[in-house]
Length: 134
Image (cartoon, rainbow, N blue to C red; front, top):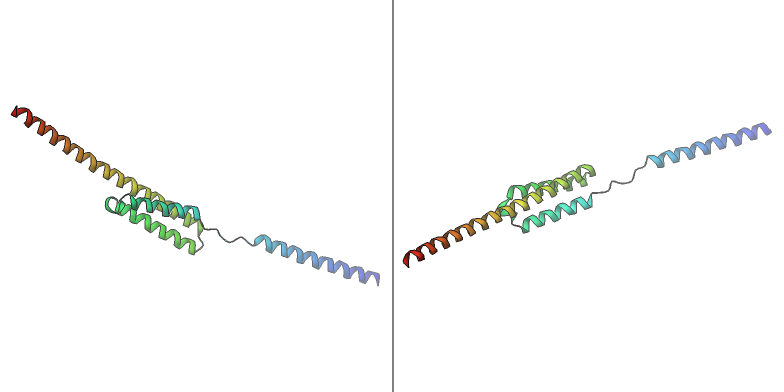
């Protein structure tokens, strides 16, 4: 009788140990939900706004369009829970937007330099004519 009780207790201990180990394994296999790259998405959006404010639509439209497309791809990747790809697209969007802003500023600087040169040439011509008249 004692042997039967001991076997029964040993069987229960094995059963509970097995159940505990299975629960432990299931808990270890469960992964947390993927976290979207919010910082990268925010940085890309801000870079696009900055590029738009710098006149990128006029001076660097293709780069601005590329930035918007990359941001859309990043948002699609988030909805598909592919956060690594989403972060990569967000970074590419940010870089494209920063390039658009830089090209815009460079184009504006070239235009200002051209205007200044034309103004200086006009002043030089006016001074030459004034000198000839005296």
